[in-house]
Length: 365
Image (tube, rainbow, N blue to C red):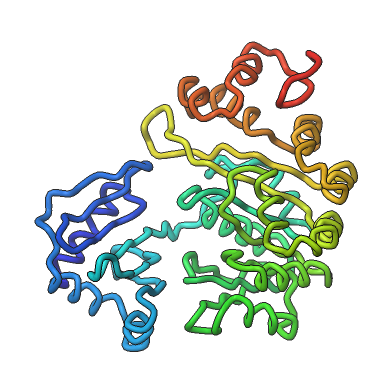
């Protein structure tokens, strides 16, 4: 089974698959450029999935899986690559999803990410959120940010991940990478002790609960630059999701804290490239300036769209502006842009050289 499993991983890399899905009673499936594609292998049996688990899981991870019904881990196949793995139970049997980690570090330019990220990476303190659905490029983007900071600043960067995906060597700064279950119990415990580890920059792999967010916000309040992720698709939804973590009697307080400590939100979606060679990110990017700070504090979140629209020269980016840029650079087709745009009419006007005063309409400029 080991040789068969190795060949499966090799084939996934050859096809540039982002994910491998294994399920009892079914053939393996690959996700390639966002689409799920069945492979020609025969269906995996219970015994085959047990053999896969024996390859992937340590004794401790086996015990955790038996108790919890799911376990996260990283796996390295020599000569093939690294994978982020989730083993879980469904309908009483074992299933597995393996996310391929492209270990070669890429620059913002190679990833087609906004130039503004360089300025964000050089900030001294505050909270920065990178958001998007699963598989939208959040982890790759955070890795590029860490690499940029590592190469340009003499700082100590601490990452808290579940599991560690990209491995960072020390360059101008030093990087300490902590993996949940291997190096620390959980995100909250790691964040509580991080202040004794002399960090300048802290990366929290995922904001999973209220306690983790409070700890991350506290780290930002005490003068650290904190990066983390959320599964949200736009700026307004991101702020609403954070506020909804708290009880209603705390909403005013958290809005005030966010207005003071939030520095930027970037929301990402991966779209198919026009040339068929993979995918490229479209982004919405808010930089929290005094006007945005005031709107957040006063609970006028819906008006942040106008801040983004008017902040283009400062490095902000609306989703339609991002789509417009990708179409002009011929990285995506106009049809793809119109399909995913929240305001296709506005996008069409941008392509004609007409800009509205805000995303939702207004005076022609």
